[in-house]
Image (tube, rainbow, N blue to C red; front, side):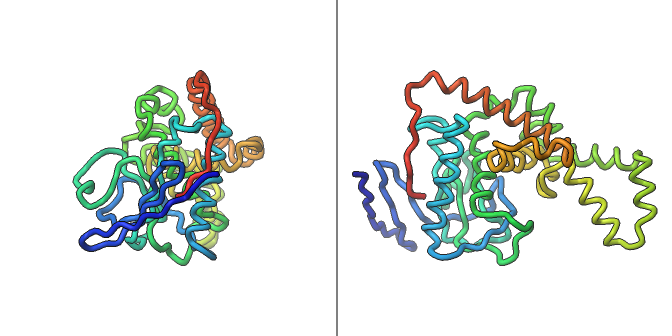
Length: 276
């Protein structure tokens, strides 16, 4: 039987909990500084927080195993999830993709961090803790395999390099809107600012999974990857309603399949339940 051992460690200022599950540590400790990549989809924990986190973490791990990006000891199995004792400043999760000065404050690159609390009002209805962890695993994929993201498929799909923080795709889309006669006619018929905003959002979501996805290429990818995991068995639902999003989802699907084929040569095909 799997044995869960809990060890309490005391630092000068903080009490940390180290959990060992099949020899794999999960450490909850204090962290500081702003993260490099975040998920801005606030989620409210319900019931026992750690039960919710463990369940969500392992739901996503199982999904990653099903699509071929995770097997015991391989690839995304390396990614841990830690709970910080720092409260949220608007983000629901974050991950560092390279070492930096924040290491001295307790952070570790390639770890998904959840804040100790979450905002009360979600940015978008229907989003869950599972969605937040899906999003952060997308950034973790880049951390594990940055060379793969420098291949042509990423720029073709998301309009810029992963590390390009400029909203190039959004700016290009806005220029297309300005030259779109049908959009300009519909805009002219709008009688209020709220109606114009609804029209804008409706068209935006045909091209991006969410408003947050329009910020830059890496967040566009992370949001699309989140959607891919969530709807991977029914992507065709977006063919007509969100055609550009559908093309991005299919591109991510091809990238996932390509990586899975590369990893399939390993004899290890199982995955294990871990404590977050």
